[in-house]
Length: 168
Image (cartoon, rainbow, N blue to C red; front, side, top):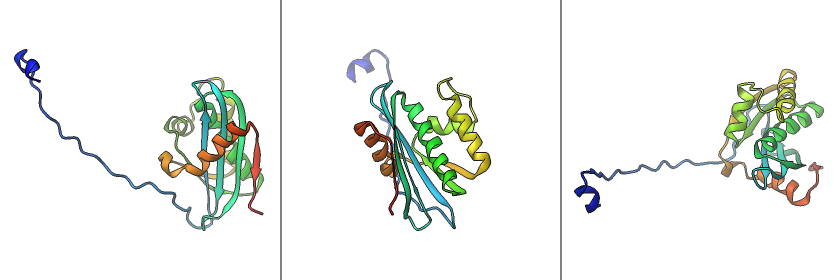
């Protein structure tokens, strides 16, 4: 620092404030369902998987899923997870869905109805279509609150398999 001062640079010590955020999973309200999704890709384009879980207002699992995607980017995996989760919800007759995901990029692509890269355009169109059939809301969750969906996304990559899990 002394050398910098001799050269005419003024150095001030900035005090950085740390914000503490408590991150936890929150139950959906009323009769709604919550769909938590995540995507995983091992590399910028690597083996990828999508995963998710749908829970009711009591926090009970309705269904969970993992889908192996082969070689894909993380954004493709994140968007695939939402599309798969909404498709499962629709096929099960679930209507009021709160989608929570930890990918801000994926969330922005969906919320802005962005056509995105050509490799994900069909997935965004599918999500848009399913949203027209269902009552859907979207929000971001920090990854620390999305560990169950993360588990299934990574399990899809590790197992290189697609499965649906039901508690019954």
